[in-house]
Image 1 (cartoon, helix red, strand yellow):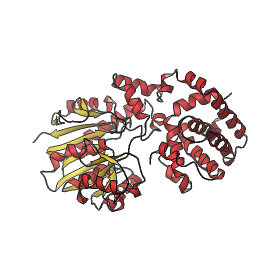
Image 2 (cartoon, rainbow, N blue to C red):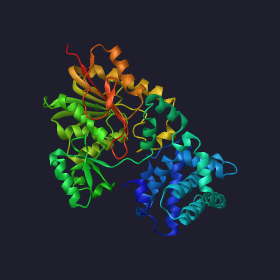
Image 3 (cartoon, rainbow, N blue to C red):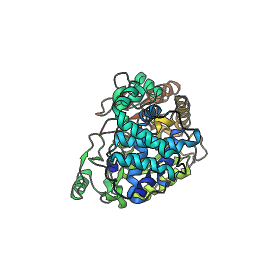
Image 4 (spheres, one colour):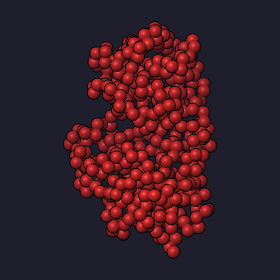
Length: 450
């Protein structure tokens, strides 16, 4: 269920629960606002089941609106909190977010947020938080108008992000920002081994769920309202998975290379969490090897394949080396490269805080190393599909242009007449769309026959 939607349904419960969920959210957000951690560990926080939707709404929503919340906090505080009180700062930001963005009664947003400071062992902060939030109630219109004079505040993106997006997409950068600030829809990938998506859509309707067929991904259905996966018909038995439409297009692009070659040997490098690998196995008769350098993330791939009843060879390894390779060339390689995540900010809003402009050159260097290391593993006549969830040209079109310049045996074969995205160098770029797909880049490369 989407964080903002579910929050409005979690207003009940005791005052003690209200205090506890806000204190837990403050603890989870403190590493994010201090740039020391992300939201990936939210499930590790102890929150009662009935409050988990509100907990996630608070954490994701506050991260999504952080530039504006921090600007308002600066107006409300006489002096900043000390570094050791990042959890109290997080409580203030949580309170501002509730008052401005969530359908939570103001008395709960103020009283329970301020009271949560006691659970953090900082009772002194209760009065400060209460005073700041009540002032925001009184002066909301004036204070918001003041901070919104700064485009970085009004568009909820740090200045360097705005500069990068404006440079990359001078006609689209505002629309990208707006899409980034809206939670992405829940899209399903239907497992064709258990029927087609039209039949599954009927199952959804019978279960009281509404959805629509994705226009570009042949196995995709986007739900009108996100739900818990356990509410999806046949989910536990592998009949459907959650995967954005743009990510499902990897199988569309690799299909022409795999369908005519039963038993094709395929590598999914940097494979976690395993959605694209699973999709390929659902559709094609292939011998798949999946490699990832993170053992914990590789375990998630194993769990995904087990739920779907699929099999692959999994290996923990660094795709910038050959230590894990048995020496047999691959017919196709999927390189879903580590990137800035600039195309999926709406799903991971902490990226806006945690990513730095200095990270981009490091990422482009890593992407180049991965391309150069994996290319020799591809047989002559084989296909490599390069993918990122980025909208930055230096990671995408420019990266592939540089690769083609140094590899005379590589030929771009990305189709120019696709119904989705737009041409971008030798590849295809999708920009994030409200109520539709994430931002993504694909480039299909063929190795010249020997």
